[in-house]
Length: 275
Image: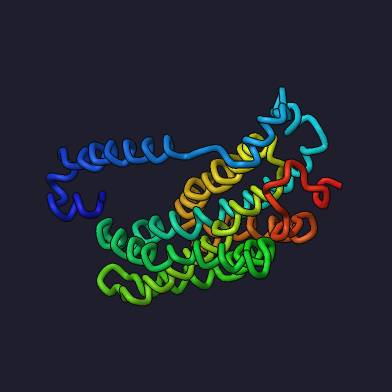
């Protein structure tokens, strides 16, 4: 929407007042989202727990001040790795084009936008793949690939996006690969989290790891990478955080993260994980 508005009105008009147009249009999207949310019903397992009077009286205590805290810790490790891969492959790619390769804002947005359109189905594909081979190998595979290939991929991206000589197909292809890593870690993670926690405290248990992983782990990527590049002018130094964090999370999750593919989310407590 932003790209379309900027293209239609032109840079000067967009900077003057047309930047407000996407915000106004977003009210329509908010209305649609509210309508969809109002049509949703509670899950059968939650309704069953509620009908049987098995609702937790203090979900915070049960989720974080009990043995469940170790599962929260494991989920946090997984989600920090996922969050860093997501932000590094999607948001820093745009920053890289604009600040490192000095590609103008509109062109860089077109490149990233095209790659996103092409790679978005990877979320569905890797979610489907995790139904077949498991959540763990797909998610950890995304972390491992990100940690081992970010440096050469970003160096390659730099060589094909010189200001006056942008190789659009190759640039889009490279960012397509980066976003596919996002699909690997993000596509199965919703199923993993739902299967990992019991129904009575599922939402409470998921909320903290999710926001730590994406809000802090992933959210620090633009700040850390930008600061490192501004201070050193080195892509290698800028990529230390995006490479080191998924690598560490991969190693920890390799030993701590269970496979949940065969766990039923319709059971209040899963004995296989809770034993």
